Image (cartoon, rainbow, N blue to C red; front, side):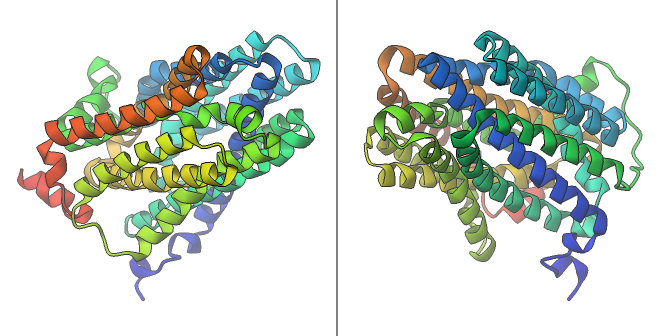
Length: 413
C-alpha cells in the first residue's frame, strides 16, 4: 500500500501526531469554555438577549481582524503567530475564571470574551495554514480528512464534558480552557515545520484584499460560502440552548451539555458515512438539499417540547450541515494556492465564523422580543427561503458535479 493510500499515513508522521493531539485538547477546552460562558451568563441575567450578545462579542473581532490576520499568516512565521495567539487566549481564559469567581460585572465578561475572540482570530489563519508545512504533499489530503474527523470528535466530547464540568463548577471550565491553549502553545515549540519556497507578497491593500478577490473570482466558492453564511445566520438555534434546556425541556446543565453536543455527534457520524459512501456525483444538489434539511430540522426543534426529539433534530442539523462543510473545505483546498491559504482561510472564517456568532446575536435579539420558539422557527423558515434563492440564482451551483473534478472544470471554464 502506497503512502498516499494508507488511511493512517498522516498519523505515521511524529510531528503531525504531536500537533493534532495538542490541537484536539485545545479545541475541547474552547468548547468547554463556551458552554460555561453561555450557561453562566444566562443564569446571572435570565435574558435571551444576553446570549445574543455573547455571539456579537465573538463576531466583531472576526469581522475586523480576520483579513489582517490572514495577511500576517502569509507574511510571517506562522508558528510564532500561533503561539502568541494561544498565550493570549490562555490569559483571557484565566481572567474569565477570576471574574467568575468574584462574580464581577457581566459587562466585563463580555469584554474579556471579545479579547479572547480577538486572540483566537489573530492566530486562526496561521494555524490553518501550518498544516501544509507539517506533512508532505502526498499525505496532505489524508491529514485534512483526519483534521475534520478529529474536529468533530472534539466538538462532540467538548460540549458533553462542558455540561458535566459546569454542573460541578463553571469556574473550572475556564481553567480547563486555559490549560488546553497553553498545552498547544507548548506543543508548537516542539515541532519542526517544513519551510515554504514561496516568497511572501508585499504588504499593501492589494494583498490584504487578495483573499476576497480570489474567492470572488472563484465564484463557486463565493456562492457556497454565502449560502452557508445566511443559512447559519438564520439557523442559530444553538445559542438559545440554555433557554430550551432550562425553561422548556427542564433538563438542567447536564442536559444542556448533551443538547450542545448533539449537532457535533451528527456531524461526526455524517463525516464517517461520507468516507465510506461513494462520492457525491451531484455535490451542488446534495449541498442544497442538505441545507434545506437543516432548516426543516431547525423548525421541528423549535416546536419540540420533548428532550429526545429535540436532541434528534439537533443531531440532524449537525449531520446535514456537515455536507456543506465537506463541500466547502474540499473546494477551498483544491482551488487555493499555498501562498494564499492564510488569506483565503481568513475570508472563509469571516463567512462561516461570523455567521455563527452573528446568528447567535440575531437569535437572541428575536428571542428577547418574540420568544425563543418564534426565533428558532422563523430562522428555519428563513434558511429554506435562502436555499430556494440560491437554487434560482446560481445555476453553476446546481451543475456542480463530483468534487474531485472541480479543479479540472474550473481550469477549463
